Length: 238
Image 1 (tube, helix red, strand yellow):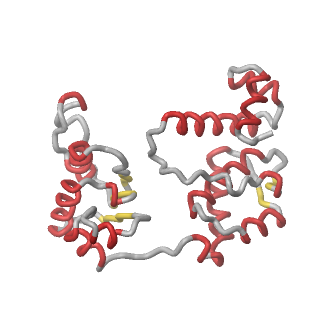
Image 2 (cartoon, rainbow, N blue to C red):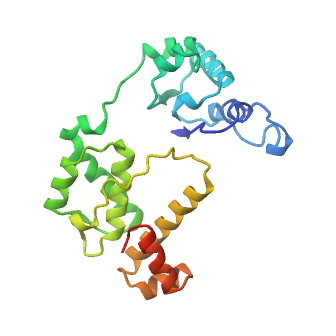
Image 3 (spheres, rainbow, N blue to C red):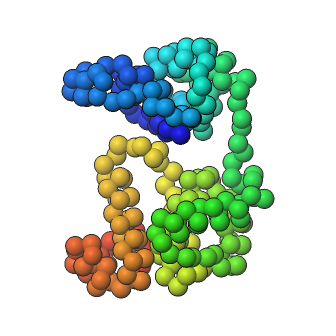
């Protein structure tokens, strides 16, 4: 599958990425990027279809109506019916999608699948970081009781943080940082927020790699121990 997140891309750039339309020489010129529809994927996933500009909505609707061999998944956490009624989303496109929608309940209403989802995310982290980590019974009970206002993204972020903070092979309640999820859009262009997120992730990875040894962490991060201690306090990772 190919994944496409329109985010804050301009209308011309969305058309260029999806269908190969030229968006000007400054962006590489026509033909510099193979459009999604021509990459030979079995499926294309558009993440947050509400971010598509009107021209891209119209063009994609025409493409879908004509039909092709690609399996399309258009996801959203927005109320497209409301956006359509307010003129912020194509009424024709919403009419087409509304007969084909599959509504996934929020995580807090799917508690019967939560344990399975936790294990699936942990397995991905084990593959990514090459370290076997389990969840203690107390931590699992806390995860199962939590309301998850940030939905799946908060679950994934919370588990990754706990995984990287844990260096004994078992995630306990002390490693859980529930409620720290900021809830910002993942593609936000706020430089301060994105820089802080990257800094926090690198500190967590250094913590995991060096088992919390601050001297080794600071050396790996290329900063002084004092700067590291300041940043640990800043991000609540003492």
